[in-house]
Image (cartoon, rainbow, N blue to C red; front, side, top):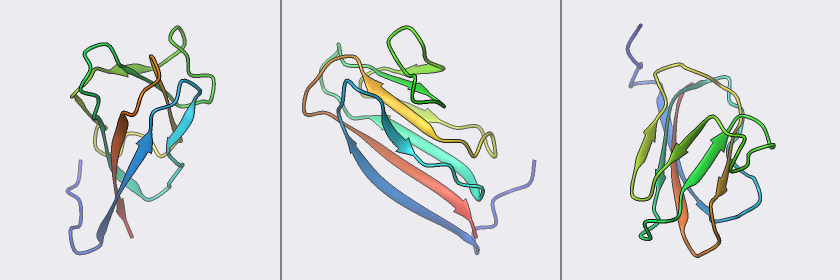
Length: 102
């Protein structure tokens, strides 16, 4: 594994609103070297189900982010789309930070 070239690295931070339908959390990016997704929900019952396809559901997902928890993508793991679906509606958000190498 090689370190991120911080002189060429750029980051973008976005906020994605809660949706019980699958929404795009991070678009496919061939330059992605890091990705952080934080479930900003303050309710203990609102989880984010995450998958690499729009078929994300409570039964079809790759991993779950509990409330007030952070997912950190392994370095250089995947450049694919990340889709998320919340377990229930509300005014919660996901804070998404993507790190790319120019």
